[in-house]
Length: 161
View 1: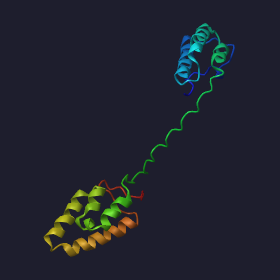
View 2: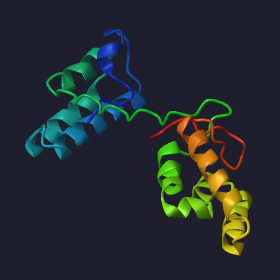
View 3: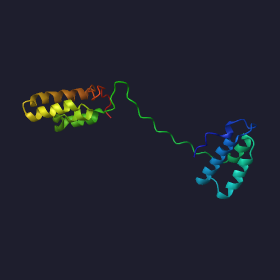
View 4: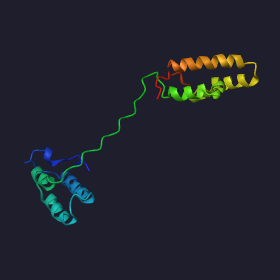
């Protein structure tokens, strides 16, 4: 448990504490009981001392032996892509493109280019457009490998993973 937003040890000791600050220290004491840092028989004495305290120094003495647990590190925020950069990843699109499903435009559907993905599928199914689809498919694989493929919103897919 981290200390509450108010820590009496960070204030001038001779200054008077407010009711809100006393409540913050009381919450800290209760949390220490919940975590097993204090025995239940200490609760009444500590809370009496908190509510009788007048200064920050008196409040600090109530919790000076309660070691705060270091705060848990916050997870790093997800890296937002740079402007014009897609959130879609190249590797899944490349894997879908390399498989026979790539001829049906599945990699384009993944990227959000549904119309052109559907066009590849129709051209392949009617048979006459198969040579066009094969060329188109190979071109897409090269563009994907070079990291220049665009998603359905026109943003470039830059990240492999």
